[in-house]
Image (cartoon, rainbow, N blue to C red):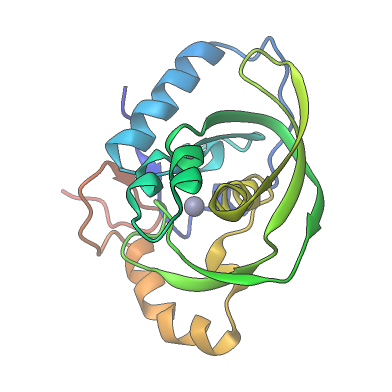
Length: 196
Ligand SMILES: [Zn+2]
């Protein structure tokens, strides 16, 4: 089932997510719905707060990036096969010189901005079978994980912009929260006036 994606301005996007356990109700259905919702919106990642749940869960599937002709064959292959569920994730290390990437977010349609992040991360997390892993990632895979990880920490990529950039996009963000945006997937807008 495709779930509505929560838009910018909803308080759930500002909440720090809570850890979950194996007995989380109907977890398999939730995962299935989240994957369906992410693919329907052509996203490369989706975090539980974006469907209204303040829990530490996110998905990543970087395969759409594999088409990028600027990447090496090895990078294309790595991105093309990377599909992962992250439960109760903690980034335990971030390393290297910050690099810029133009990020977007399913909760903030039509807004893309350059964001600086460190290139290498080490993450401890549980997979969909609640088995523990500690793994290091770099490049675009690390980038997507960092973006989704921010969601479970209650942080959006727009929070990381300069105050100048924030001022420039403020009215667009306000419009998004009111539903004044063209979007081709299901969304829930916090400040939309009720239709009669
Ligand atoms: Zn996002």
